[in-house]
Image (tube, rainbow, N blue to C red; front, top):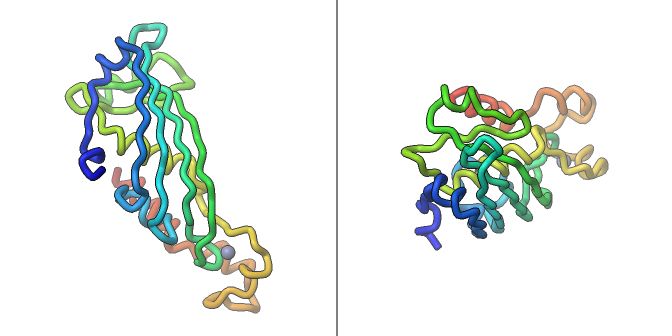
Amino acid sequence: MASGLRETVDCERLAQEGETLDRVYALADLPRLQDLLADPDGTIRARFAFQRTETGRAAATVEIEAAAHLVCQRCLSGFPYTVAARSEVEFASSPGDAATCSEADREPYLMTDGAVRLAELAEEEFLLAAPFAPSCGAPEACGRAPGLGAEEPARASETVRPFGALRDLLKENR
Ligand SMILES: [Zn+2]
């Protein structure tokens, strides 16, 4: 469903109708996830439940679930990781508008001409939910990892984070 990636939806209309949309995307099709993924196989299932806030703004509950293979930031090997998350987002038409979002427990999300791309919303939710420095949690395998100085494993684990650094960079440029 390649066309699904470009699907944009009218937030106001969906909020008015209280509509819930279910979508499935291939992880391989979401560009901002690729640095985190050890392999691009798998899908992300997303549910978008649109509603209005108490103050009448368009909002949605976004739920995602994905069985992914992330890159361990210590040993750089892939390991299975299930990303499951749920967020409340409130749609804003401009950065200034986002600053006035009424509810502290809702994440402001910027629309373009009143619309959002659902695939990007799911992608954003994945990025928020994924661990900042993924670790495979396998002490033996991680400890014997190639490329780490065996004499200084603790120090290496703090400094060898090529993908994490890239991710920071991407965040700054957002
Ligand atoms: Zn590891």
